[in-house]
Length: 317
Figure 1 (spheres, rainbow, N blue to C red):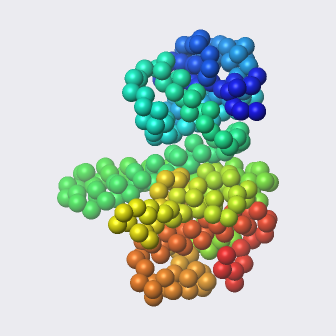
Figure 2 (cartoon, rainbow, N blue to C red):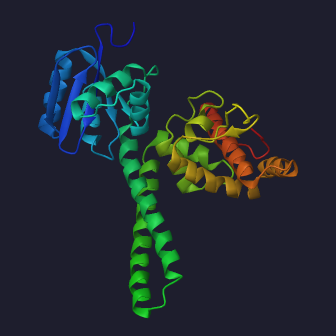
Figure 3 (cartoon, rainbow, N blue to C red):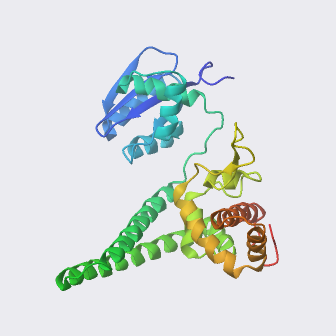
C-alpha cells in the first residue's frame, strides 16, 4: 500500500512556540490549535477522525517536544524532519509561498516521501539526551571561559570568572555522574554501555553519548553507522572533480565525541595505529586519517553491539 493513498493517511504539523497548524495530505480541511496540552489533545482527536497513521513534524529547537511525545504515546508514527530537509523539499517542488498553513501541507508532502518507518523513541533516552545536551553546553562554556581567562589582566575579573568556572565544573561533574548512574540503572543500556567501553579510545562519556544519541547501533548494515554519524565518504565526480571523496551531514554531537575517541585510539590501539600510520605513509592528510579512524570505530561499535561481544584488541574490524 502506498503511503497516503490507503485508509492510513499522512499529516504534517507546523510547530510554533504557541501554535500548531496541521494538514492531512490529500484532504482540504486544516486545523490550528494552541501548542498546549489541551491543544495537542484536540489535534490528536482531529487526526484520529481522519484515520491518520503517520505525522510529520519539523524540529524547532524543542517546541515540538510536547506534541511529539503525545503523538507517540497515542500510537502515531512520528517523523521529525530537520529544517534543511523541508527547505530542500520545498525548493525541489518549487514552492516559494510560505505561511504556517502552507508549511503544514509541505511537511505532510515531505513525510509522504519518507520510505523508512522510524522507530518510536525510547523515552529513557529522551531524558538522558536532555541531560547530555546540558553537559555538552556546559563543557563548551567552560572551554570558552578558560580561553577568555588567558587574555584577562584585571585581577577582579579573573577572580569572578574563576568562581564561575569552578561552579560550572561542579555542575558538569554532577551531570556526568547522573547520566552514567541512569544508564547503569537499566540492564539493556548498561550492556550496550559496557560493550562500547571495550572499544579503543572510548571512555565513559563517549560510550554514554553513543548509547544515548546512536540507538540504531547494532541494527544497521555495514557502512550505515559511518553514514549516520557523518564520517562516510561520498563520491563527487563531476567535471574536474574526479576521484575526490567528501563527508557531509550526519549527527554532529556524537561525531564530536567519536573524534576525541579516534585521537586516543590512534595512540593506544596497535591495530588502529598501524592503520593510521599506513595512511600517513601513503601521504594522506591528517584530517583524512582521523576521519578514517572514526569510521573504523563507528563500524566497530555497530559490529560489537550486533554480535553482543566486546571488541578484541587484536581485531582490525
